[in-house]
Length: 194
Image: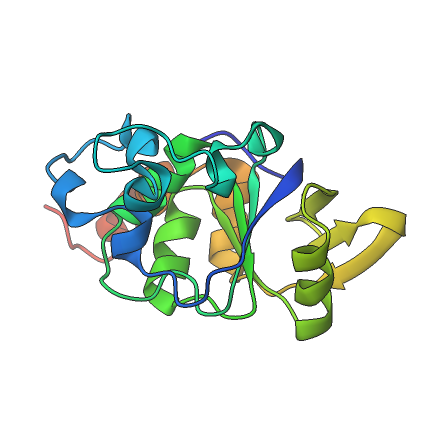
């Protein structure tokens, strides 16, 4: 992952509530252990018809959504199973932040481990974003702040460790590996290693 201190993008609005991980990435695409290439299957049952043709009416298929990296979704985003593939698919599709009034805990954890910032907003901020698709927002990880047009700011919470990983571009395993010298010193000091 690359370090992410701040991310600026236009929003795309998907107003559906209770978007579960099977809607984000249908189970039939869970045949890989590689995150690359899953973006083409994100929201596959909504994006494509039975013959595999893009549905023009679906928001993510519309030209105005091209390049939008902040997904504003209805309440209770990422519920359902714990599949990490959902975060992989969104990341590969180009999503770097998800804003909802409620985000499922397991999806939140998977998103953060994969460089996606999950933001739970208050009802007022969420309603404004839903009513104004395509606005440019800034997600500032350092300040834990979502900056809306007109310099309106919304403070969001993010776990300290997840924030550290995003700021320095490491996943949890990468962080542990970066501490190898300190771990070895500790083990030598306390005779854990012979």
